[in-house]
Amino acid sequence: MPPFYVSFILAPLASNSSEVLASQYYAKKKTSKTISVSLTALEGAASMNNTFCLSIFMGLIFFRGLAWQYTAETIAIIAVQLILGIMVQKSSMSTLRACIILAVFPLSIAFIAFLEALGFD
Image (tube, rainbow, N blue to C red; front, side, top):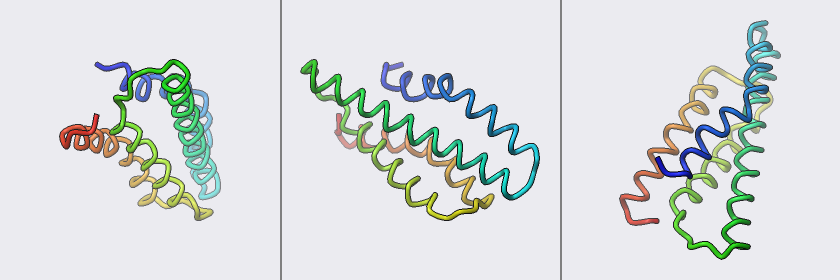
């Protein structure tokens, strides 16, 4: 498994475990407000994590002069950030919106595979 996938799949699960547990606590109350707070906290954590990882990644490539081989991954990260930014504009969450947001992660992995099949490195 390439290091990129480890850093963008396993690392977020480990680093965001506190947000996951707090969101689970809020969601157990099963009110519209607490579930919205729970989903918003998870979306915020994911957005911050993606932005932070992407900036570190770009900094490493720039300052260390590494070869650029991550066009597909970078396009996918930026696309996910834009999609989530558009989707979280409303103040309350619905089950449909939560399912769509949940589907963005596996779809982004498939999108990366598709872009790599097209020849993006």
